[in-house]
Length: 201
Ligand code: VGL
Ligand code: ZN
Image (cartoon, rainbow, N blue to C red):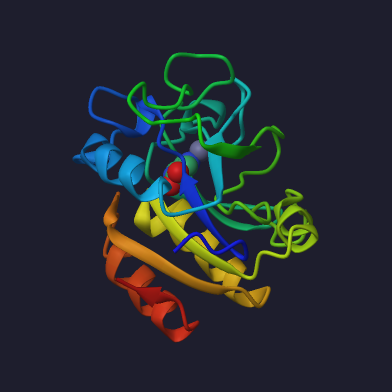
């Protein structure tokens, strides 16, 4: 491949999303060797890192009577409450130790504002506040993105949908992703991505 306009985006391959982590995704660590191998095909590799303050509003622990995996209304819309995870500087927030970070041109952190979550690599959950990734990609002439990582039905899906909405050609390598799958969220994510023209392979 090695096409300058085609970047690989590796989403949230962090300890807390891997077995033993605070929001562990089944077999989340199994995708690491395949992602490392895929990096060799890309000139541009972008990593994302979920990066929350300890009192982040997406944590059930911050809400009276809040239970993990329930949904509440925030100023910007519905928000799933999560167990505390990916706290800035913690071991859980670190990228998986076997993930090859050497080829990464950019590591983008997201979810660092207490009041708002950010699943997508492009926009926070208000769908308006930019992370700056679109500016980075457009300035570098990148118009095509391959996405891999965790979790298929949350951060990968939101990133893929935003990228498609911004006009990128996007494909998600499902074999190099793993899902949380809350109440059918994986099926819903697949449908939404197909409808948006995201290639699933
Ligand atoms: C994620 C839930 C909360 C993800 C991040 O990376 O998919 N999911 N924070
Ligand atoms: Zn998070």
